Image (cartoon, rainbow, N blue to C red; front, side):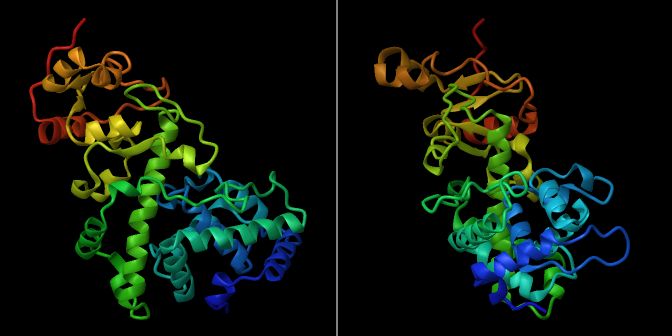
Length: 335
């Protein structure tokens, strides 16, 4: 049985030994699998920043997104085992070990600590001969100056998360008498923040990492560049259901200026994806060069700039924004 410190204070020598044991492992074709080592468990926890295990059931585990298939091959396990471990770690399965839940609460609640542990795992893997093909740096944290940035967090006010945690059913977490309230609340707070991070990742990918209002595209190489684009909700997080909060079709990618304009109701989008501008702002753009440089056409597109492969925003979210944020009759689009 492992202890919390075997994960939170993992030593490079221990990590190297565990990677070597994994490399010497044979795939299990039947019967019980060997227990997960700390490095496997921590790798699954890091992967949860990119993959929502709830999207894949027993019959769809083979479709799981990266890095799940790569980790499964490396661990000589099926995808379903990796997904089950991820479920244990976020508390959505009843049989998750207490010490693993404590590890999740600590590392997901403190992304800086997760980044340190992740680097130890990655460097140890490289030391024993595991290259990028076998274990890619899927969080892009290989360099010491790289930051682990949970995206989309500006949209989440702490009070909104706390209210959501208090009002949530917590499902089976309330039946876990071995977990104190502090761990339970940290798990739920982390789940909200990680869910927002995955949502933002999906929206950015779907929109080709460019502003759907003006087309500004920024290289995704490096955390600082990522801050130049924002993926936020059309129907805000604080008033959305849990399903709406995770729905990438409730999101738009925008540069900071057009994101703020959309959030404050200066611009909106109709069901036909036409971009509308408040009349007062449109009038200002006709006379003021600075306003025209941001809200004139161009640079503001007439319709959302979506990739051909991108699913459009759901009309019900756009309608909600028009009625509750924009709150002005839509002008007839010019031909």
